[in-house]
Image (cartoon, rainbow, N blue to C red; front, side):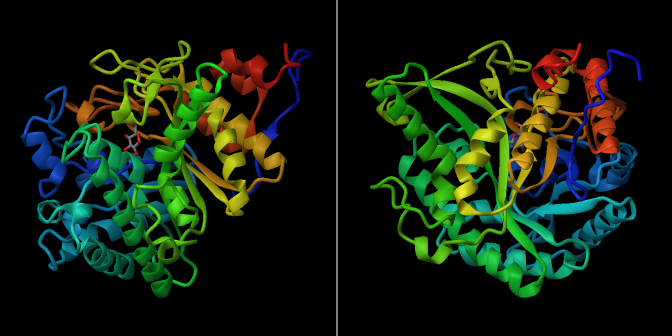
Length: 453
Ligand code: BGC
């Protein structure tokens, strides 16, 4: 070792899960029976691009599983498509299950432990037509699908997420109109959808545990770090409102904690309480907020982004998708929710970054933040970077590049970005060293190892 190399390593515990997150609609291709496909046909994608073959996983996920194996991943989050498994109400498709069994076996053969999410934004057209999570029967519909799917796959997987980001699903579908059913300002529906999803989640939680004794079941919650722009009571109130109606809205129900009044959120707390085995955290960014009396529709909250230049690529309208990219926020979330005494699983963290200029810093900062938390006694089971290969970014089509590996949707060609090698090195060493930062993320070196030269 040369004189100016530090021997330090931020070493992680054995058994820590290093993985990536993916979702069915974004990677499989050809999901013709989903409400998202209807949304595409209706012109919902801002770039006008169809999802098409996506990453071609329905034909050949194994190609990307090889990449995951080469990087040394020991965990991978995928979702199953309800639209493929139950294409008509009450009618299940054994071929879809067979394909998922192949995919799960292919992961296990590569020593990669799967985490399955049962609903990641997309579902069958028939379910959408019934009103989706506003329909009275959604709890039974979801339970029937979950029971069938988990019975068929439980010999190959024991880590389950019922929902990806109920808060984002409800905001985008019923308040901001960016995802189907593309409604704007339907505040009562927003809360109703969340309450129904909590009921669906709780029933699914008990169903899964009745089928599989060693199951670990939770959901992935999206967190945005809201910071008051001025240190004064009204802006602090705005930050609190934003957090309570977005970050904490679903979490509080599952924790059995009362949410804001007049929302209906507190109706079924006893029924849904404590139906989680770990806390699933998706976190990308932070925004500043101010109290704004002219904005009753957003709870009097005005958002200001970005706080600095770390935004990642801007979307086709010139907006920063997540405000400031803020992996340090993992600390804020974990410390705030530690009172629930559950282990944490960081299930999404990443950045849209075609040129891979910011991603290495994001990975390094997320790893350092988790390391510090683990050293202080917090239980963190694993980290999933979003995502393995560039994929279909919902209403933004293929414009946003979140992959460790670059993927051209037209040719299907793959080209690992430097971040893929960086992440592979971290996994190989089970931790982060100054040399890795010198090579891949020099801008993070002094933040993380201040003594290094
Ligand atoms: C979603 C992913 C999405 C990612 C990047 C998350 O909120 O779960 O499906 O691709 O953000 O926008």
